[in-house]
Length: 216
Ligand SMILES: *[C@@H]1O[C@H](CO)[C@@H](O)[C@H](O)[C@H]1NC(C)=O
Ligand SMILES: *[C@@H]1O[C@H](CO)[C@@H](O)[C@H](O)[C@H]1NC(C)=O
Image (cartoon, rainbow, N blue to C red; front, top):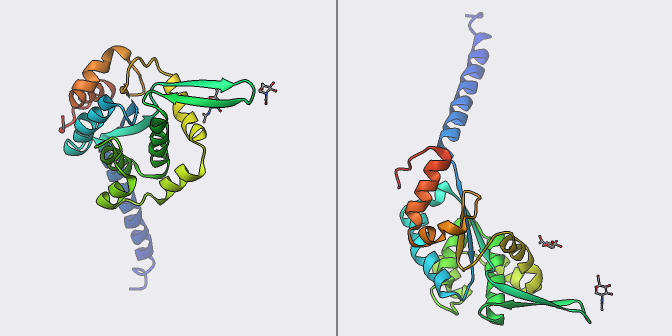
């Protein structure tokens, strides 16, 4: 009887270790490989609105590809800039005017303060119209946008947009929207990505990870 007692803490410890190893193994199996998807877009560009609403959102949500994606929104697009030499103040000229710069900055604040699922829902909702209100989307989707709104209200638009401008300048973008897949921006694949996003995503996923997703 006495000899049995010291043996149980040891066997308890062992069982505990086995359980945690099993859980770690399970976790590794459940966390899928993620393909990077970089979406370069403009908030007032009809093609950007269409692509995000129809192709991207459906693939990510309806086909459940979001769990296999590292999705990155880059709200900037075609922007000209001019620095006044007398003041050193830089002015940005967005393709669809000043209002677009402001809206791009609002989207950038959402990117910085909300989860990727919230970003996808909010951005898709905002792109339903040219002046869809963030409060309407926030209420409809039940997503907290306090931090995103605070970011937009307290920071300079140019400063908010600089990071996205740099990311956009780094690719050879000829039209908007443009999409990078797997960390690569291929200007020759844009048509197939924009008009057949799910299939192109699946092909790239298979190429990169040698895995055929059942969602494909
Ligand atoms: C603008 O920047 C340049 C280079 O940094 C500097 O030499 C110049 O004095 C600045 N001008 C003003 C008005 O601040
Ligand atoms: C963007 O690029 C400019 C010029 O290279 C650099 O000075 C600036 O720090 C960059 N900004 C961000 C936010 O990455």
